[in-house]
Image (tube, rainbow, N blue to C red):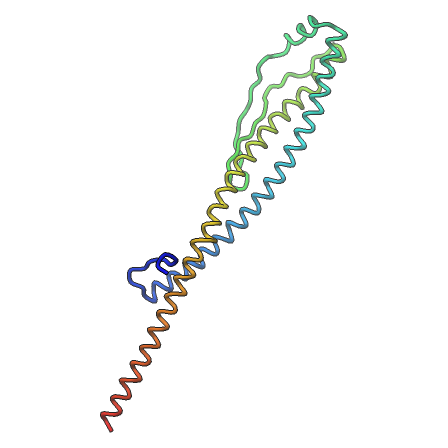
Length: 208
């Protein structure tokens, strides 16, 4: 029994009231954590759906871009493609921010100063330029979504450990302790009543 209940040096009725308050608080905290876990799981599923959709769209755009690239190679040659590529900046600025997702801070990514499509170029090059902005934006969004999934997944695992501890260890131990103390105080109350009855009978016997 000692391993299954909370050890109290001097069990009193006031301590029993405190334990009951702790039990009520633990149950309320447990329900709040379960609700938060449910909301986080729903957010995780929605974010995962967004990642799948963004990756599917990115694959479509990349397939079109590669088709235009190989068509440009076939029609204009490697030198023309390299000459056109030299006019495009090789680096881009990535702006990193923060946002709060269900109480979890996550990164946001956005490319700044994406070059605009250049006029008076072959159609094959134009197709690549038109899809360039959307491809870069999708890459940033996918990175953002995947980081959100990592952070939410870590928070869900942490919540599950706390919920499991409350459900399987802390709350049952409080309940057993309260039950043990209640039975002990009830037994002490019955013994006190019996003792008072015996004393009363002895006094009546002496008076008679």
